[in-house]
Image 1 (cartoon, rainbow, N blue to C red):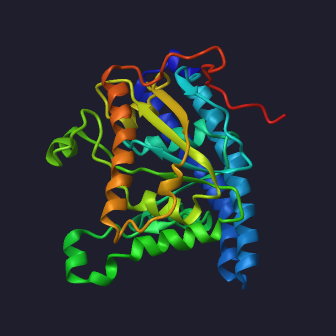
Image 2 (cartoon, helix red, strand yellow):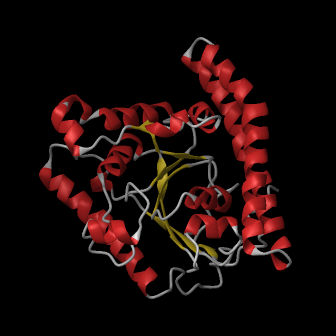
Length: 318
């Protein structure tokens, strides 16, 4: 572990550089040629097979490389708790609070070999990022428009575009195991946003339920359940993303707890049925209240029974 001997900013710079090299190699030299094949090959089934090959690269050597880099530069993580094991052959709906883009790296690392390769709902603007956007498209990450209320008022046709994207994405993966990751807050939580949006929570933004409801409606019977993740960073003088790169977040707390999908919430018209929408929002708010309470008490991880081990390493592949 190099963090013992090098200053934090040096570790941060080395981590960033190492990740750029990793993305360039696995994304640029391995995945990009396959992505070009996917772009050119005719037929949905053929494109899906190419996608599966690209996912195998992402779920295997790319995440494994990052995991090794984090171990070398930062050391072992010490505060990840998984209340249950999660079948990697089943599909899961993972929901998490969102404070930093480092959340994505933490989730990839934490769930490596525990669940199917994760897919995130991304802002459409990210598709234009050099290399990263093209690889995310090749991995079948769904890109969302997230139009403002003003834009929808000017063009009502935009109202359902993100829901249509969600429907198409969920339909494609009805027969393949997948981990669908949703950040119900819709954006990274900062103190300024929390205050500006008058959030009722001490550490979180008010969750948005529309995309989550639609994913459950489209794939509810396929999901083995919900994985409710809470990430709580160690306070430092640096922003969470830079603090993570500097190796200061090895003790960042993460708890993954399983939740059943309420049968009565699998089917319903979230857009038009006000009573269903109210029940769904009440359920999501209840999850967020528990998450906020744990963060306020500084106890994201609950008291564990002997079967609920503290885990910092992924399970062996054997």
